[in-house]
Amino acid sequence: MAILVLASVFSFGLGYLAGRDAGRIGDSVMFEEPLSTTATEGQVLASKNGTKYYLPWCAGADRIPDANKVWFASSDAAAEAGYTPAANCAGL
Image (spheres, rainbow, N blue to C red):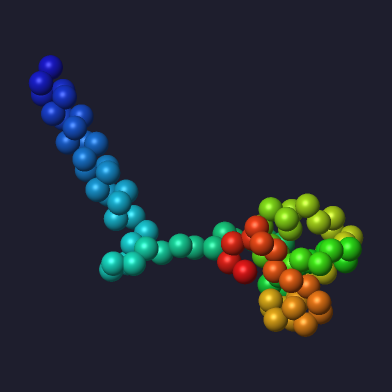
């Protein structure tokens, strides 16, 4: 019984250490942006009827009907058109 407990603790410890190091380069942690197949027309999008712009993977972008989507090459281009960044879209 003691061997089973020790083997379990050892396996858990190795898994924990491996997971802790996953995604790290040196001392910094890497975060990757989600891939989006809908961002072929620009970097950010807005609604014709709205005032906010979003990154393609933000929740607000999912609620914009395709017929109302306006694509911009950059956040600066969207701001020049009068749109402001969405507060609930991380990364803007």
